[in-house]
Length: 209
Image (cartoon, rainbow, N blue to C red; front, side, top):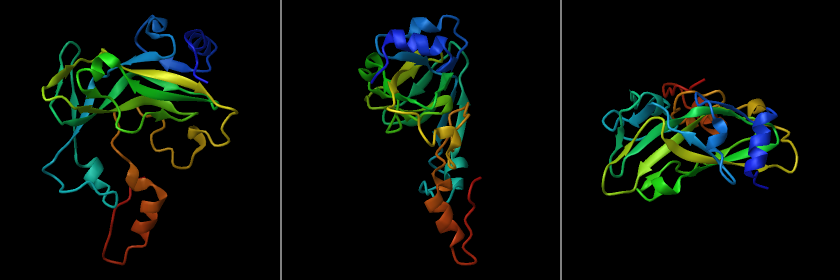
């Protein structure tokens, strides 16, 4: 069941859903079945020249392969055709154990060719933090994005019962409490950590914490 505008407002008023924002009037961003979040000032881009491949068995190819750019308010970040960058929402969200959220793009940006998430449009119950945006430009023209603009919409869905293992209790909740756009932490998943530990002596792979 997707929450309506009145239920979203009530969930925020009751403190079930917490939204931290510099915007005074949060409710102005609530629509019939979703809530708009704004674009933050920080972006991360992959450096193509440092590594030939992004390899989950080599965490450095993720964490050591990104450049961070901070865009001042009023200035634009240009997303080039075919480019992939990580952005972040200005708002931080905290979900209860019985609600999930879905991140969706805005129609007006979709018509410019801007995609705000590749596949990770699902926010688990119990998650707290900003939303990392996986931004792509499908257009043949560059598109300017501005910090503070409405970048995505969040829809809330009621679960049949509270989760037994909400995100904040999950052993591998890699992105809990994130503030900046976070690069992939795929390398700390148990299947890759296990493979790294089983490598023969002399074939060392660093595994993130």
